[in-house]
Length: 135
Image 1 (tube, rainbow, N blue to C red):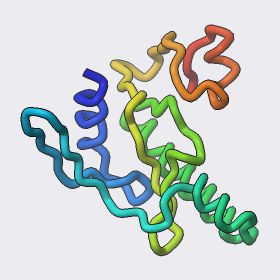
Image 2 (spheres, helix red, strand yellow):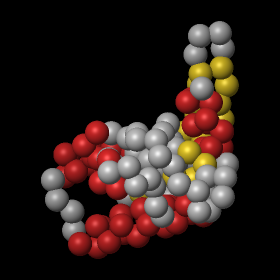
Image 3 (cartoon, one colour):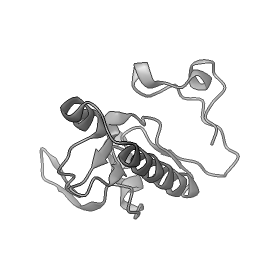
Image 4 (tube, helix red, strand yellow):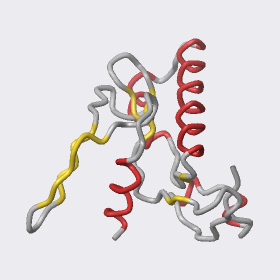
């Protein structure tokens, strides 16, 4: 069920800072999802390899993340698991938000979700406090 939701949401998104889902199909045992190739893996991996970044690189990453999130939120979608491991980097060092396994779509713009989900060390304080999601 979660995978079906992830695919459904991801298929609707088309933005330079969101990993592109090209195609998916399934057989009796597996689901195959063809995603845009991000040669530099995730920001988590790139940070481990490089250690540090130049200020213009960080500014570019931040701009790309904000641009991608603005688009995603404009579609009334909440990612709910944003972390370095889910921000991917292509061959030109462009960042792309991916992994929509915990994402959900709001029915209306003022709707608030109450489900506590995400990677434990990355869950926002307002979610842990039961105040819901705000964007």
